[in-house]
Image (cartoon, rainbow, N blue to C red; front, side, top):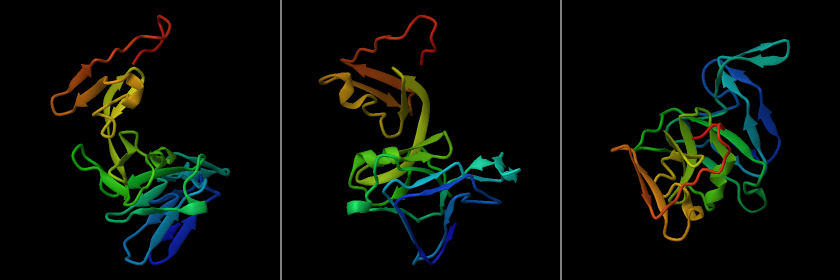
Length: 196
């Protein structure tokens, strides 16, 4: 689907297993002031790629690229009965890749932090997170603590409220330093299991 000067609203259904030669195997939101993409409900845009091929009815190969946002194009989130709900799943690629100090906005207005869980980055080097009432695509760090992946969005308090009253686990990417402040990380799996 190629969105230029039209409005596209999806609050249910699925766009899946499609391919494009360049960008937006599922949806390409392109340059145009009047184009609007609104997503909510239990919309699913997954399994789409660029550079893949269809062989005997099956999508083969390609690079994940579900919803491709060009620069300065943002998804509007549904509201009221159309707000994002459990079951929504949308993959995101942006024309400009995020960096540590410059995440890329994917939705300029977001009222609920948990809406970030309904989106995922098509590229595993990135993740979707909530920051200051905005959904953004940001960096994932090559570090897991107690089974939790450290990202741009959780680096200041990796475990959030789950690590105990007053305890924090934080990560500074500039110095590559993990800091535990009144926190305990206990091994709870069996010996020989894959530990992160």
